[in-house]
Image (cartoon, helix red, strand yellow):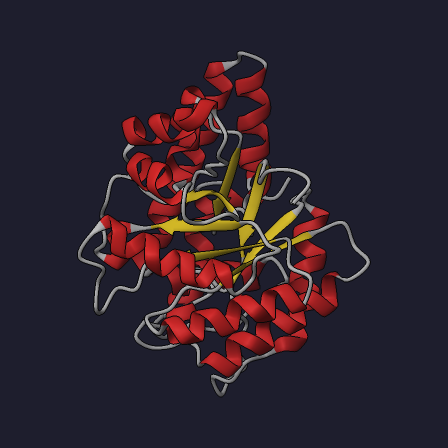
Length: 304
């Protein structure tokens, strides 16, 4: 990549039809909407994209479709390729390179977990070697993988074994370790922040980019937050962060994945319902969710 993952990166939803199959016809609408709110990069097939609930062939098709839709546009494509099967992860990495992705990312295998930092680096090196022309990001999300190693140590060890190492997609609330990551080798590595509810805190210690699910449907909130922070207007920045927290807490009360996908539908991007094991909204909950979103003012401050 010619530039790091600066600004907001939308971790996109995988769209499903009513029968639960992939609905790739929606990708064009997703891309149009994300571009319309000023987000310049998408992160496809990650946690928000329910990658763990997709078959390998579905993930390959998802990458191909996003590549087709973004061809000729200025939107960058980052593909998450991590999975429990490293052979599948390598296939996904090769596909991402073939289809012109700007970078790849991979989380740790999480069923049979790497027992040491060296084992984790070896897994990442294998995946990265399958797409040597692409920058590689390790996707640190210990709350979901159950794999928790020192990320500053990861950068030091991986720097000698992964030539294409670009940095870490850091979905981890440990701000102290985050700051150390930013300082490794005089700031050599790109460490996009991955906890939307704490973006302001990350900016305060040096974050310049962020990957998140709520940037799909509330990007203006975070854009105002970033502008306010850069202008030294901390009161306005804190207001926008509180709005973010209020919105995410509201969605979480309904089941975050289902509520977030329903919210996408409310704003005209019909990405369908989540797959099991993520639960769907119960009968009548969608209308109640919409009412709750109206009550907190989301349709006024969340979209513009």
